[in-house]
Length: 166
Image 1 (tube, helix red, strand yellow):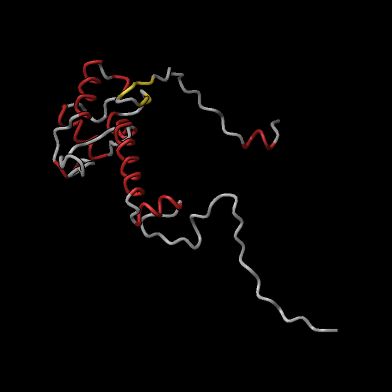
Image 2 (cartoon, helix red, strand yellow):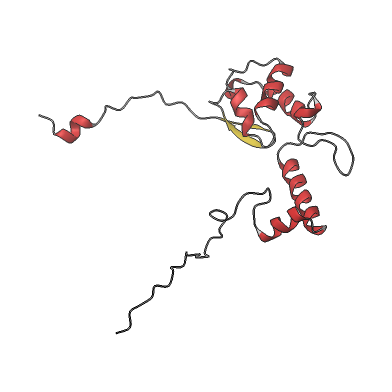
């Protein structure tokens, strides 16, 4: 007879082992088991709306798996993400300060632009730049309970109690 611990364990489901393939799109490795609609959101700068627009413009079914994409489809997706033919309100860089153009950046380009923007804010010593420099929240969040630095012990002091003199 089986012991109580053996009875509680559920039998393991044997799943067929599939080789996990990775597909590289716009500098990011995306698991082949993901669907295109969700998989494209793994790329920095591509959200759900851009992924949806990509699938609609390129006429790729959203429920198709990443591993099922051909080389031509992957190249089409990468070309579309470099210069998307979508409405301006969907793009992540509207009215750029340097050029005045509206563009959409993806991956490392987006990270570089963000870093340059933060450096510019620090250089002109704006409020947001000063908050970045100090490592504090930039967008008006409260700091009483959160945003404490690691290693700094901040304790709540006890009120002094009046001791009885002997």
